[in-house]
Length: 270
Ligand code: NDP
Image (tube, rainbow, N blue to C red):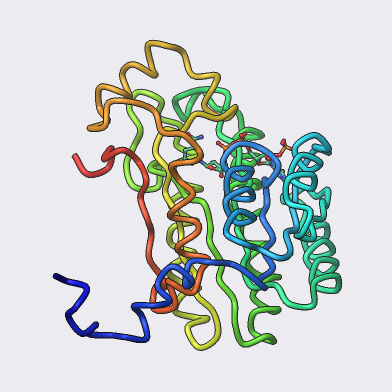
């Protein structure tokens, strides 16, 4: 009877699930009104998050109102921002800080995928720069501004959305710009984890092929080709990513920094 054995770490035995709860914490999420970001927003609120700031490009009243109705005990605010614009990112992060006083968790998740051509010689310069500006520079602007706050607070957890494309070249989609930007996010995570080790944690999540609007455009034959390369043999859902984002944000991960959690159905393992 395992229950009668003395617990090796009695202080953990009672509180292990509590370590995953986000009660009394405040979080901000870019791209939090749609797709993966929306799933993370909802998961954090279900885990008891007290204050949530959703930062998004286009107004998305439906998603945000839905959260406000379902989680009336939490304070939820929406801020419109283009993460490509350094001044806008600075302004919204300062606004959230003023409103919440403390920001415990920041999820830099906003991203775009599609570029004009699958091969670099078919891609326009504008497309290359746009992918870099949203997927890498946008994350950098967020990290830079939240880092100042984390340093002043002496605490914080930054989670950034990378991709399986940070690890491998996604045949047959290719898309060098996206792969390079996401590899940059992955390495930014490792660099900041070292820079900020004294006061904050920094980690990345690398989703595989997840069912959202971002991946919706992909032709059926390409989807089937991906499924055949994925050991799980199917696409993932945003909900299946939430455990990773919850863990990295929570006090269950106080010794976890500079790492990447791949949630890709095994894609990058084979
Ligand atoms: P969606 O297209 O569903 O959502 C993207 C979100 O990012 C939207 O909320 C969008 O805002 C926001 N966004 C886009 N551009 C900007 C911008 N310039 N400024 C502010 N916000 C912006 O995509 P996913 O949920 O699938 O993607 C989320 C993240 O996950 C991205 O970083 C993506 O690269 C990554 N990812 C996704 C995978 C997938 O298969 N779906 C696989 C691997 C990684 P708005 O609604 O206002 O346009």
